[in-house]
Image 1: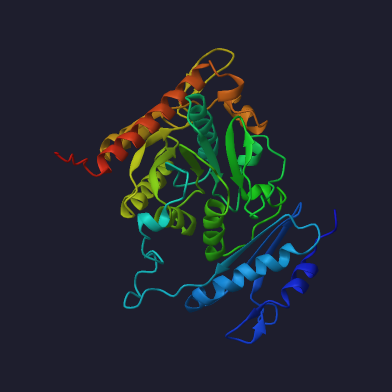
Image 2: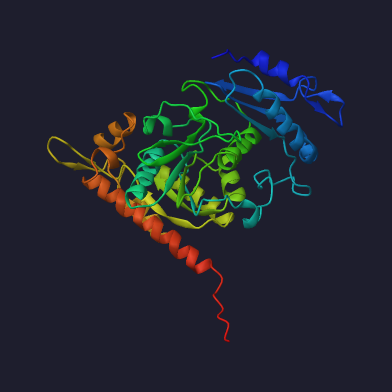
Length: 373
């Protein structure tokens, strides 16, 4: 395969002009964040927010131009801008950057329900839980995809044991990879595992939207989104610009983790995303030699706070060697031990999530009006 380099990409973009400036995107110095992996190319165009309408056509021209480079399989260009704070609110820097888009404009064809699996902090096993929930939903007969929304630290490729690279179709849309009947997409498929993503917030927002809308997901009953930890730009992008059917909050039992989990709960509430429930991970440790139970991180905290916040408690999962080893090896426990107690717990959690989504959908559906002849 011909070698693709940053220099070749920039050279190809020298002919892509910005009409209002009379200069190319390269001469203007707005091309940044170039990533290249196995024929897949991504980069951003840094613009002013007021240029968005004009620059969308420029973005598309950039993608077309880079596709002409020998060896390029797919191209994803995103528009990014540093948005100013809303006028008249200088003392509220945490206010969301933009108002929520309408459900109609947010709809992603073919995807019936998008469920976010989130946590207030890292290290609580959220990705492990998200992966096993997705597999469990598949085993319950649903058509399921999983999207890794953690741009800085993608985990899904390793947890599912996927080393292949996504291909593009004739429309130059990326085709999700498939494993264990799951359709999967992650930034980890497009960059080397140890490559740091030195991207600013707006670039992350654009990349997330394109992973959702420029990937040919097909028909799905559920798209599980493994969210990054925290309550920053990525979380707001998913909550405000995507029609989330609900969010699942994962936490360990100790107070410090639950404090951050409650912040995540509060963020989703503020942007009107239904909370489907809490999951307590690493709830206890059962010694594989003597079967003695030890509550290393305390126990029951997530269930207590679910009750206080008036949301469902979906279940508890132990700190278990087999669960950890399975995801490290790319074989989730729901695959390696489908009839084991942990897989049964994941299946019950997945069934509860599916039922809750269906209930919420029924409650929010407009009434059927019968016409009398």
